[in-house]
Amino acid sequence: MAIEITVAVPSEARVGEGPFWDGDSGRLSWVDILGGTVHTADPATRHVRTFTLPTLVGAAVPKTSGGFVAATTEGFTDLAPDGTWTTRRAVLPPGQRMNDAKCDAAGRLWAGSCAMDFAPSGGALHVLSPGWQTERFLDGELTQPNGLGWSPDGRTFYLVDTVAREVNAFDVLPDRLAPANRRTLARFPDRGGEPDGLTVDADGCLWIALWGGGRIVRVSPEGRVLTEIAVPVAQPASCAFGGPDRDVLYVTTAREGLALRPDSVDGSVLAVRGLGVRGLPAHRFGG
Image 1 (cartoon, rainbow, N blue to C red):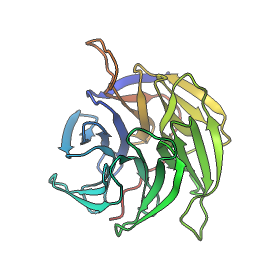
Image 2: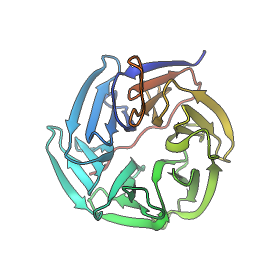
Image 3: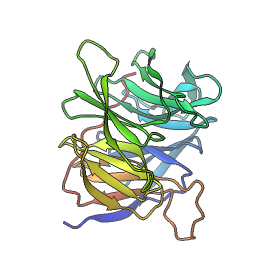
């Protein structure tokens, strides 16, 4: 089957991020960071429901109890199914915000924070438990933490640092929460885009959106680029596998800072079919 790229959900997101496929409901959710919005849609009908928060939203993940947990400017916000919201954990000082976030198999939300101006070493990694308690790791060791993911066996954790243009890998140890043995899995040169959001497929390979590069790359667990797929947007921001068989790669995109033609699809959610691989199930927040 040839690769086919279509617009899954038309949108004009300033910075579309954090796609999440909910296998139980068959719905796709994502955020617009600068718009402060959380969207959820049925790709079959393109019907979109939108929640707006008075803050920046780096990511939002469905909760097992309903609604979403959102990683925001202040920290972590509880977004109820009716759209009401409460900031449950304000853990960031002024001048910082949460960026990308994702849940592990235990239902914990892992989120990266950064300085608003992406000041060097201004980032950290936060873990929010289902009981809404937080722990902080890699403080001052990151600049713009971004795409997150785990290997199929759960023994390796991946984390992008966009400004550093690298993808890091860590060991996941059974007796400790903090990621261990940091090493650089892949680096991208000062051209061709910056690594942004990512997802991991069932074969253990990483699919990484290259912001400004107009492409998605598949990287092996050893760090080798296996595939490059051009997409019809300048700023692909993140990606996630979805659909009934988890074989459709949904790509969120951004239009912020671009001079666009009237027929541009930048800011929409794209669907890439025909890749011949499947994704891993996404995990909800346990709270």
